[in-house]
Image 1 (spheres, rainbow, N blue to C red):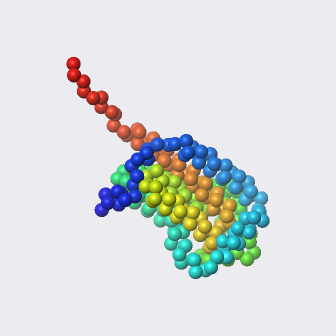
Image 2: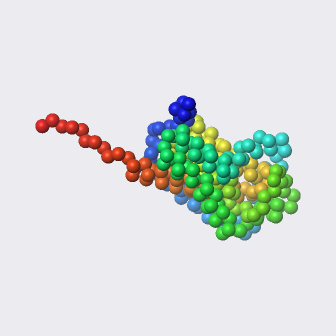
Image 3: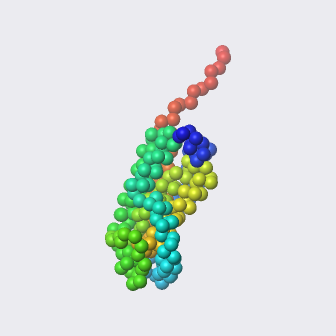
Length: 225
């Protein structure tokens, strides 16, 4: 059963390389987190308020559809998915690295929250429409977005292109859903996505180092004398 799942979703070609594009994404992600935090620390820009209201006022009928997807940003759900992915990939090292990705992303998000110290929409937007269980604490960055994007980024190199696109699309939906339910502003989820990408790419780097360290030495072909 595991072999059948792996054959469907896993891409064995080129998954052990850290490319120039990966490095560029890291640089861009850092810039987004820093710039977004600088903007968020000074309040709520008008454009962000407009975007929030646009998404937050979508029909309530979307809530039952988006709620299950949003759980991919939940720390424990994401951890379960990460460990399951390691099982499918048949690697204890990959399972351990992937299993640590959600908690690392959550901790990074918490650290950024404390630095930026911006509230949630309920304290910044007078008529924010809240759906589901109210959430307190700080807003920038979104922990759900960070966890979802970290998981997608860490898994991306292992997945076939079609499944990779699905993983990224689900992470985007998690971010959008957090704005829709009224617990985060647009910059919160954008910054969370960038922070998650940082964690995911870092996890891939660790995975590459561990894989190379445990790779058996090449055996030179025998020669006739």
